[in-house]
Image (cartoon, rainbow, N blue to C red):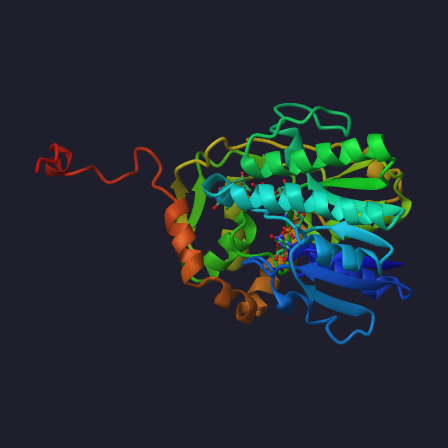
Length: 349
Ligand code: NAD
Ligand code: DAU
């Protein structure tokens, strides 16, 4: 199979490319990636010289470019997205453009060229926060951030193509993923790299929101299993099945890096913070997929990787990174320094 992997220079996409080229000798890969702040050719350095690998620098919303690539591959696997919830709260436009419109452009090209498989990488966030129990694939969507709404909107468009055109789409809804090559803005790589530099670990709110963390190789294998064995028209949840709070993430990173627990700092909560996601992944497990790394094992590998690969992440924490950081993180209410009385006086010309 010749596969176009969009967003293949990102975190999970690059792991998927390594998996395909490493385990399917008859497959080849064309990565289409815009190389946004989150895309990085270094993530693909281990496959750069493989004759079955090709890289195209471009945008999934570029109709002519996408149509040309679709005409010479058998399937598209769509990882390309703006992926960070906090950035979607600040500037949602790029999320609508890439996550929704870009997915539409890819589907039109796949339809035009009569592809028989199209896999869209979605997220457990489309279900919204789940107070009790676990989400199954038929549950209704209740997205609560511009990011999760953009992913849900793309899925609704996909569902309409399945119904209207018999479009052969498969969807995976993965849980929060961590591991090597993750841009250091998400909680785990941010906290690890900050800890290694003796910087603060900023926990949102009271730190009790939980996520079902899944190691990246498990996520990539799940997508591969669904691509080959899934039933077109169906969605598949992919989660480890655990629940880890923000406080537990911070404490674990303190233990594994040996940094001071005093670096843990409470900051103002994320707007509309989803307090819990939980997936029932029975449907994917029935295809033969099972996650292999629990949180303890995955975190040991991840901390070791960031410790050994400072040259990969240090340049990513540059000026733009800290500018976003400054805008995003605010003092927790009650911890803000008291305003001096003079500051409270009305300003008069
Ligand atoms: P990432 O931010 O690390 O990588 C995204 C990649 O997409 C980057 O290489 C970027 O350059 C590329 N890209 C962005 N806009 C593009 C465009 N318009 N055209 C072409 N390429 C573009 O993301 P990730 O964490 O690897 O997530 C990959 C996918 O998996 C996303 O669709 C995300 O919604 C989904 N997902 C992520 C997680 C997670 O925890 N990281 C969990 C479930 C689902
Ligand atoms: O669940 C799947 C989703 O997981 C993916 O679809 C998204 O692309 C991915 O970014 C991730 O979203 P989250 O919002 O769950 O990940 P994030 O790492 O941003 O936050 C995880 C938890 O940690 C959440 O409860 C918020 C908290 N957090 C996050 C950051 C960045 C903090 O306490 N402090 C932080 O600095």
